[in-house]
Length: 167
Image (tube, rainbow, N blue to C red; front, side, top):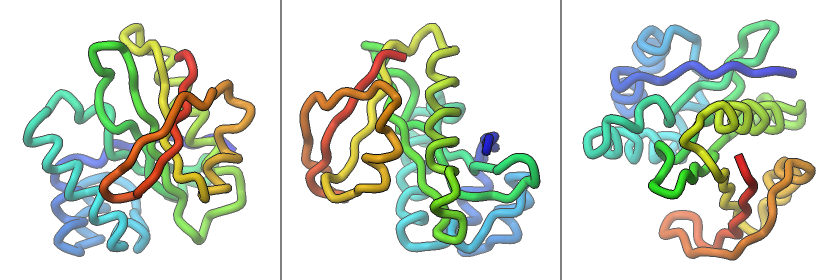
């Protein structure tokens, strides 16, 4: 099941933080779901707005609604943590609305993110950071060429395993 990404502009992110789903959907041009208003999602939107204030060039890389095709249902959100760094590394991020889980959307999002990374000459490496207990995400990256390269401590998510693959 393929997905396409729709960038969430700054106006949509601000509306989501305000809890205004109708305004956010209008700014994004797609009908966003209540999942975009969860505390976890709002934490992401807050970080992304702060990031855009510091690094506007990250805009094309972050904060996108994932739209399942055919049909056009918004099934979650995805993107990268930012533009490629000086070494050509990007880190994928994706989250599926619980109402749409276990239907292949996470895999479709990951594959679309990998395709985009492969099409960008500045990207050499793709990273995924996953909590050791997140069986769903560990299964999602399986078979996509990721190799365990270490771990890190994330202030918000705790211990994460790091996986990388060539773009």
